[in-house]
Amino acid sequence: MTRLTPAAALLLVASWGRAEEPNAAGAARRSARTFIPTARLDVNTLSKLLLERSPGLQDERLRLDLAGTDTRQSRLYDNPQLDGSWATIPIGETNPAGLQKPLANVPNYSVGVSYRFLLGKRGPRIERAPALERSARQNLAAATRREAFQLAGVIGAVAAASLRIERLRTLLDEGKGSLDVARARMSAGSGTPLEVDRLEIELSRVAQQVLASEGDLAAALSLCSGFVGMPCVAFPSTAEGKTFLLGFADGVRDANVDVERRPDVQALEADRAAAASERELARAQALPDPTVRLGYTNDRFVAAGNQENSLNVSVALPLPLLDRGQAQVAAAEAKEDRARLQRELLTDAARARIDALRLVLQAIARRQRVLETEMLPRARAVVNDLERAVGSRLIPVTDLIQARRTLAELLLEEIDAFGDAFRASVELMGELGLTELGGGR
Image (tube, rainbow, N blue to C red; front, side, top):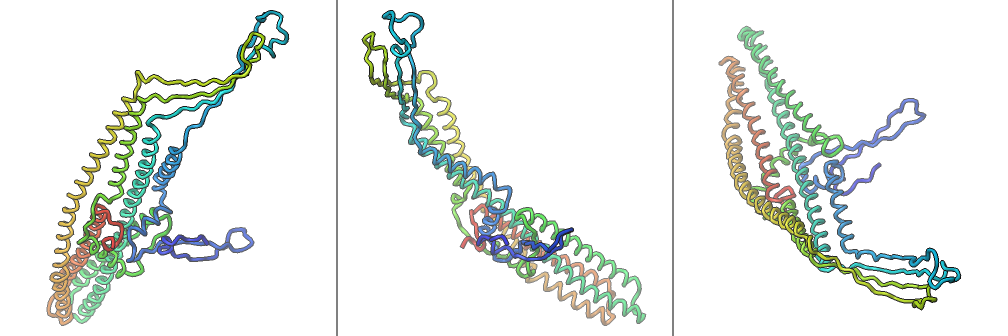
């Protein structure tokens, strides 16, 4: 069986089975892993799982790996250059004339080592590479968080669909009881077939809502499987799903986190620092980098009075008269300005959206409070009273049908309020830079 990491071990359940393979001599053991969401899930746990299994994050991981190699490369010195030459090769008559073995006694042999010394460039180059690596790391963290929040939203949809199915099935079971009462009344002569037909139609409507919610649940589980790369199932219980939905809203309601801690903001700051180092590196292009060469020459033409063995030192300087890095400086300054501006705009937008999302959560909380403390208790009480009245043959069953429909709408509205609060909480968590359920505590 595949060994699981500690993060994934919280989420994976290994189930073993044996299957017959066609034309196989024996049975093969297969391991199937399933993602089971729980109320304890937080964005950190989801992020660790996605880093291991999400195909959409592999490009960002590759960029980080490459940035790390660039950092190591930036600290290395350039290689020296080795050169050699065979010169003064005689062609035709020698001078002096009649020299024996001219190819052995005339040419000279030289070998040299040269090295280019960078002036003002090594420091900015070393500073730029780690800044780009920090940017790549923060961009990976930001992409992982975005995908983790998307997955959290899908899991929230799973929880909401499960709650909706449970509530609708409860209403369906209660409606079947009312249908039995209506049929008994019709058999006793105190009811009409029309009442039974209306109840059956109402039950069919609720059953269709159950089927639609089951379709929503299946679609959410399909999306979840695409994120985690394994089959997803619903929460072990609807109570746990409800706890998951409510936990996000409770966690971010009073949270106060500096948005500048967000990885996307940190990535822009790293980009700005890298651009500043790139600007200094471009300005250093105006400094000529000297190339120093130390050479040795063995001259075989001693018959002409040449020195047989000699050393030579030379220095070569480029002349930065035309290209002094002006374009690179302008490009680096543009990058730095844009990174700074984008960072400021991003933080301003985040702070403005945080205030708006807090107002949304407050409005949803008021809506939930009214539903929970006023409307739902009254609707349930009305349904109970009408059920007793219908059982006592005091009122027509149509009144009960209308009351049940109102109760069903209120129950679904309560679940929608849970979902709305959850989605707003996830968005607020993303704007605040939180990564854990419960306000990052």
